[in-house]
Image 1 (tube, rainbow, N blue to C red):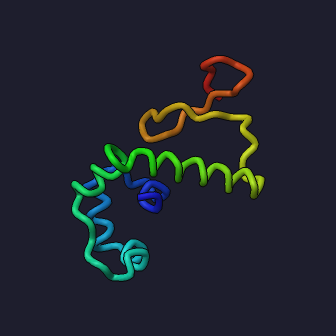
Image 2: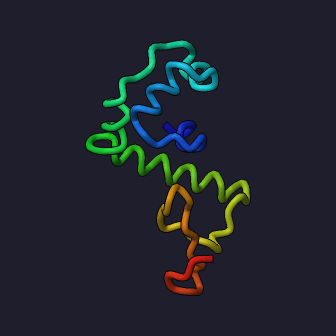
Length: 95
């Protein structure tokens, strides 16, 4: 799912399709059967929610260790598939 999100694929059905037909996804799956779209839809909720949240914090920590983030801009949402940045010293002001 992370690779899909990085490629701009957010829909569970589109993720399933990418796993079936795109070479980069098939390589990551090591040519195993593609997960069903309901598996993708169910994954970030329910029992997996805590695991996904923990993975997110691990990822942020890794970025901090690599000095890839400075926390000067916080992204709070998506508008037409574009992140909306908010500077931490101004309240709700888009950059």
